[in-house]
Length: 88
Image 1 (tube, rainbow, N blue to C red):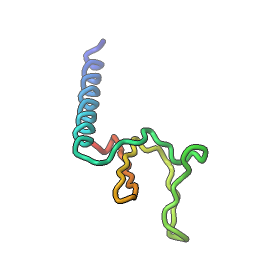
Image 2 (image 1 turned 30 degrees about the horizontal axis):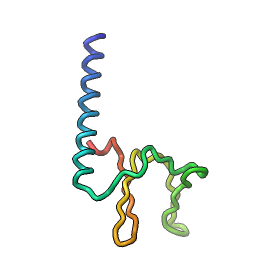
Image 3 (image 1 turned 90 degrees about the vertical axis):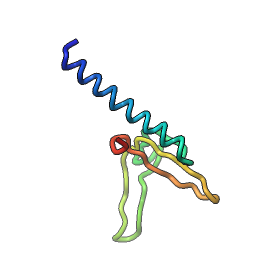
Image 4 (image 1 turned 180 degrees about the vertical axis):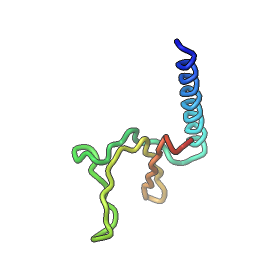
């Protein structure tokens, strides 16, 4: 293994460790709980695209959410989309 490979591997491992530690810390503090990973919300057979707004002020959201957390409060379900790239 080259020195460059070792450096890149260590850097990747350090970043991964930081993300995991951040997620663990956040989960300990939050009442939200993970309910889905790599959720594809554009596949009509699994989870259809999300429609937001109405009329000319509407849009359709599609994509893959890295992680979706949920929290039930007063009979309502609140969802939170977690993007691993933004949680650094």
